[in-house]
Image 1 (tube, rainbow, N blue to C red):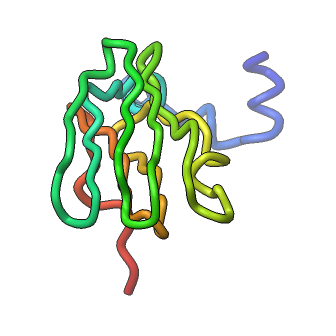
Image 2 (cartoon, helix red, strand yellow):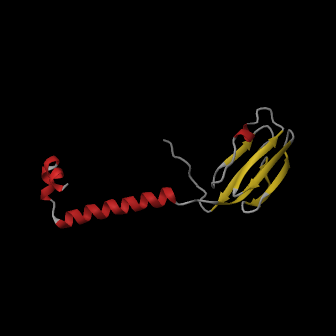
Image 3 (cartoon, helix red, strand yellow):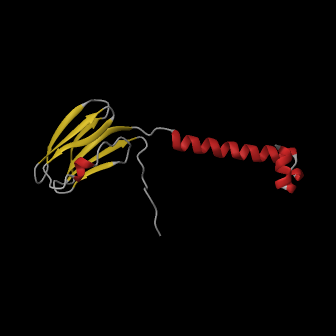
Length: 134
């Protein structure tokens, strides 16, 4: 294999043993950092339910529970099950909050605008900055 690389990259033979060790070390560190960042789980710990600006209820994701919250236009039923949360029923017209489905990572939200209900997962890996734009 090295002979084939030597044909394609003639300067590869000019690398010393220390150069190869340095390159291998940098590739190994980059691979480890990539794997750690993308494959570690950031599990949420609590679900925060707000109506308007006031927090209504805080529930652990570890317990299975159904929560009924009165919003501005009607009731919203929230289900916490198996470390995930979703809106099961809502009195809003378009049902975007119901169609959002399950969420399970810190920083994810379900919003029901007509009822002014916000369901947020809070946890250890909650992001502080989502994106930066100039």
